[in-house]
Amino acid sequence: MSSNNVNTRRLYVGNLDSTIDEYSIVKLFEPFGKITSLDFLFHLTGPRKGQPRGYCFLEYANKTEALQAISAMHRKTIKGRPLVVTFAHAAKDQDRDQKGSVLSRPTQKLTIANTKSRIAALEKKIALLEKSKSGDTAPPKSTDGDPQTRTNQSTSKATQRNHPYRRAG
Image (cartoon, rainbow, N blue to C red; front, side, top):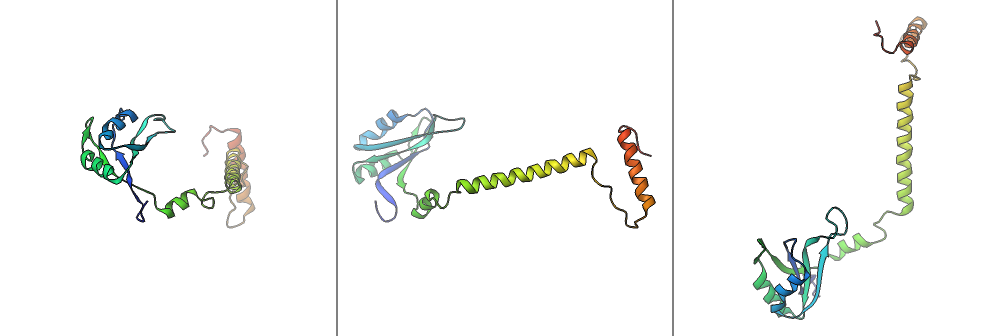
């Protein structure tokens, strides 16, 4: 592999029709040289599980065979789609380190703590909603502190509880 992260024998083949399989790829690219490896990718999860992803990687024995395949097959229409054939570029080392490093993934304890805090917040919210539904909240305090006003408020609340479908007034 060269310093600019390009393997000159490994090719990316993209924009493949979903009906194209490994055998078709081998038959299409075999005339240009010996294929040493073929990575045909499939969806592993989701609604398209088991179906082709629409691209693959193949590797030739040497660079000249790979160049011949690129020049002959790039933009060639197969099953109504123009193929994209280029050199396969390796992911940047920094990106690969970040994706796979243990430090970048959340630990099990952190995930559990985060889940527990979310559950606690939801339980508090549910308790507040239940409390407000049952009418157990204290009436708003008046600014003048008049006990007569407080009594009228509590009396009207009591009548509302006994007659929930009556209009206040």
